[in-house]
Length: 202
Image (cartoon, rainbow, N blue to C red; front, side, top):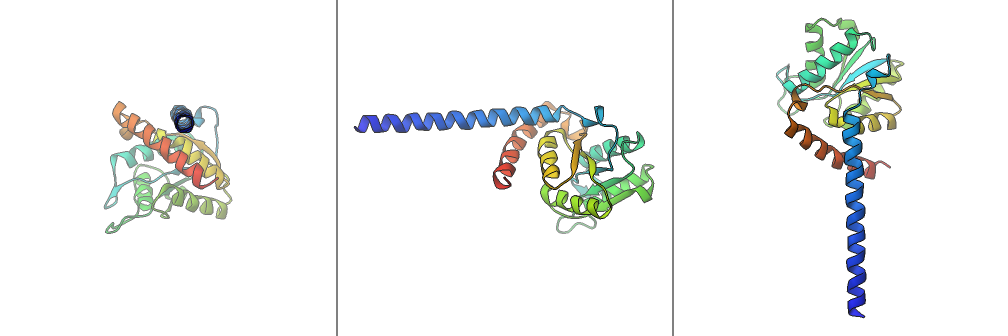
């Protein structure tokens, strides 16, 4: 009986391990697939371009953040949306917010101040997108191109959709996504981050 019981336990453990590995593989492929899709190739207009914040140094966007801002500026100049909204709060000791730093950068690079907004809310992706959803609702906006790094596409589109935003993704492949090692690390982290979000927000 002991042998049968141990055999059943081992079989159950192997089945569970296989299920977990399958889930990770399917999710990882979904993250990779979403990273390589740009909705601006099939959707030509939205109410806004929403830029996910990243590190800034006393008002100067980090290279990762600048890559996102450059992508947003390109979309705006190609008339994909009439407004740009930059997200992101600040860290302790910061003199300004990610949202404000990004807005100032866009204005300094030719975008009209009247069409660029900052929403300095939240210190993580979900909090920032919750702030964006509230901002968009107040301004009668329903759809948005979300701009971040490519491996974020699946998760931010899901989060935004869950918050009532008609969400499209158009990531930047500059700076953060340039090296193969960085991409692999991003895909791996996002596979677990996406599953974590889905498990907590079903």
